[in-house]
Amino acid sequence: MVAIMANTSYAALSRRFSKHLLYYPQPDRFHKLLRKDVKEADLLLIMGTSLQVAPVSLIPNMVNCNRVLFNREKVLKIRKKQDMFLEGNCDDNVTELCATLGWKEELLEHYAGCRLSSEANQKKR
Image (cartoon, rainbow, N blue to C red; front, side):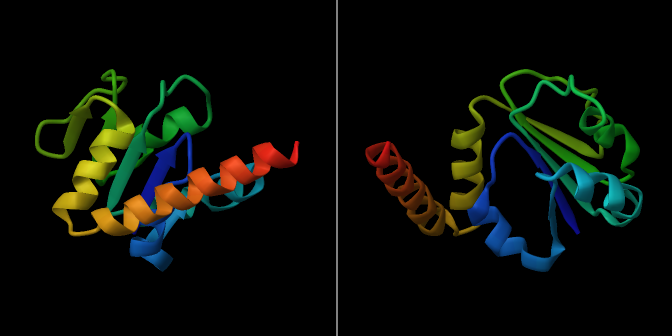
């Protein structure tokens, strides 16, 4: 199971991990499932965050799995053999990860769809 903590939805990654992915956009789901989820997580992806707002900021220290921090700043103590810090722009690092995994085309299609949806919503206003 992969848990993603992110400021935005990374739908291209979500589709790839399907049932094994946890993303916490709703507070009620967060509180209901957190204790179970942290025990089952195999990997925690932490994307673009300051880790300053509780209770979400507590999750990285609750899991016993490997963690990958995609961020401009190291906002978490990196454990040598269990964690990875990918410094820089979160979107750039996710794009590089998807390219490495052969998913770049799918990610770019998703990004294009987001831009089109955003432009359409702006025109309606």
